[in-house]
Image (cartoon, rainbow, N blue to C red; front, top):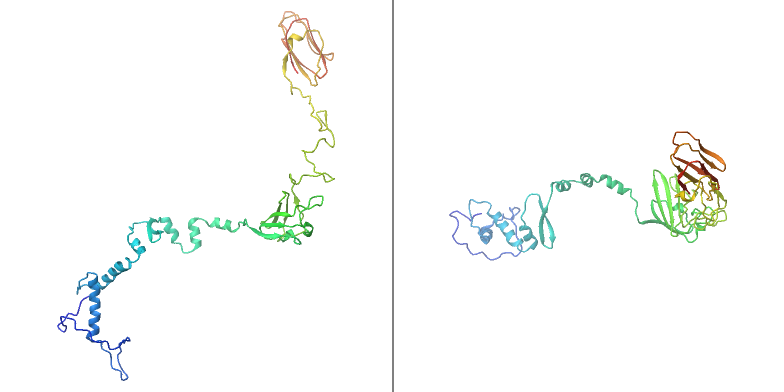
Length: 374
């Protein structure tokens, strides 16, 4: 930017002439009786003075060789005027930038820098939602979410309707105060209908419609239909639980907590059982202990098993020769060891005595131990 610089100019700006028109006038090339316009010294001097004053206001001395002085003055004006009057621009101008950083607002008219990773730039570079989902590897998640059922109520079944009208997947509110008005309402095997208030979950899996009814009293029922939508003629399956116990033919609840006697008595291991009392099973070893009865047993004397179970008897003899040993149970000779001159005899015998059985040990030798499991 520079002023008029030839010998046609004067050193001082001539006074500006009086205003000839308060309305704007515009240049014309003339024609049709209208003369062409001319700027005149006043107009040029005003424009030159405005520009020189603009440079001076921002400390720029006119330089004929510098063709960017007007630009520099405008930039200085923006920085001086616009930024000074805007706290936000001032805060932005004060930021210290660096690689992999981006500014963000952290309050009113305040900004700060935060990291901008290469991955974040790749996400921001996507041109559509599909690209963003692919970059974040969320395509399958979005597909699953699209098929998810809402936890909100999607419909309601009331009087004079049908359960089959619940033909949209999701949770349905069941509010039927007169279940007789709903022809396909779940029923017990005896014909009575379930409680009429509750929630029903409806779902479609591989073309099959499923309805799950949960009454507010705890009874549950469900049914399945392969039709294109649920139909009223499909029967319900009612679950047995504490709210809906199994019942006998008379309709009475049949539960283990109320039963006191078996309808048909049975036998267990030959022992009669009707459920009114505990029974004792005669299993060998069950509830029995080993007892040393040596002090109360004598050879050649009969004893009776007075228990309700078999008894195992173990008798240990002194090792000696030329003796006989015989074991009798109910007068049956079970074991016999004859005399063998010059040889020690075996040292022990074991046998079982049934309940109520009589047993004895006959020997010409000496018994050194007698143990019974009873």
